[in-house]
Amino acid sequence: MPLTVNIDKKNVECVTLSPSGSIDTNTSIILDKAVDSVLQLKPKVIVLDMKDVDYMSSAGVRVIIKAKKGIEALGGILTIVNLQPQIKKVFDIINALPSLQIFGSIQELDDYLTLMQKKDLGQE
Image (cartoon, helix red, strand yellow):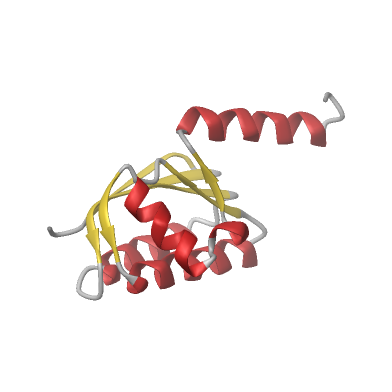
């Protein structure tokens, strides 16, 4: 299945990338280019919404790790939401989950970000 990537830039501080399809050796360059274009915006948060990704090889994992390093170099964070069980298994196998922030849904991410902002403002 070919890969497409939708980029939601409604909020320049938080950009959502929504890949759809398979991320493998042949298609990972599409996601990589999308990540590079988003990093040029210097957002504080990149959200990878993986709900429509049905397969991911190590090439996809490399792109995600590169994205994480890129956003952290800008002082931001990478979060991942809506992982399909088979994709989560890929991260489990390579032990990448502890170094990535993964949320079950956009709402769970929003709740987390709200809590972090309240902590920062001392409103816990």
